[in-house]
Length: 319
Image (cartoon, rainbow, N blue to C red; front, side, top):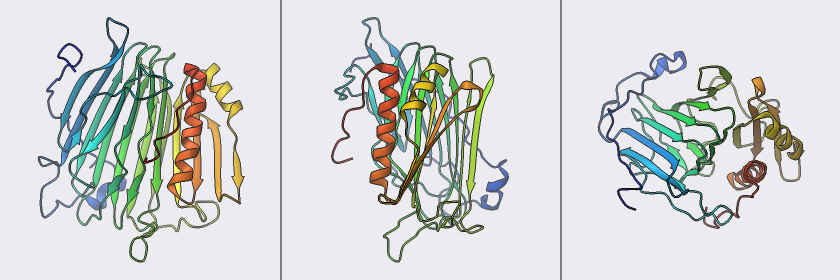
């Protein structure tokens, strides 16, 4: 990679503060070891994708602060060999109490990109504070983004909050997926739903500020058992996929996507429409991460086939 294809910007360290969120007020005690947002605990990542003068889509902007790491874009997608693929890594191991992260991702006009993580995001046991993540995703006209990270694994007494804000031009498409496990299911005697709290918010808007949709769920297993009918029942893995796309694409994706409850596979999936004709919401429940990831990837392939006319390739066998 040359200096002409990558520009690194050292911007001011952004603030990541969820102390005003009422659900996190019980978890504001300063950690006894490294303080909240200490060096190495305040990760920042800025990624900017654009079409270069040769017509190639590249990672133009990159700024990274430990423990978040991105090295460079790769081009391994056989169905879209001109698509830059980026893996977000962490040098700090699992998220611990007092960690604060921010990721700013911009996909410029007509650009496209695939983003994932190198491994599952592990949320360690927390005693004093919480871990927080802010994501700002901007898609300009005609932009296309696939964001399919590996699952989140919350351990005993995990406290985690995230806020993902997507600014989406009317002709752009963003596919954003999250997969949450019940915990370290096979660790010791098991840690199914032993975490303290997961607070997850995803919201979208137009470039002019028009609000499109907002979804927030707060899960406190200690307050209400999740393994009951009408909530998660016997399922251990929950996938939530947001597709922000123009109405004509959303209609065709909706018609091609099956909603089902399959007792033999012990899986279920459903699809609904986001408000303001802004896209779709797809959810999957299952017993293990493998089948759920496969269902999410099949849905993502349907989305790409509609938008780009090409399917997703087979997942790497070691993923």
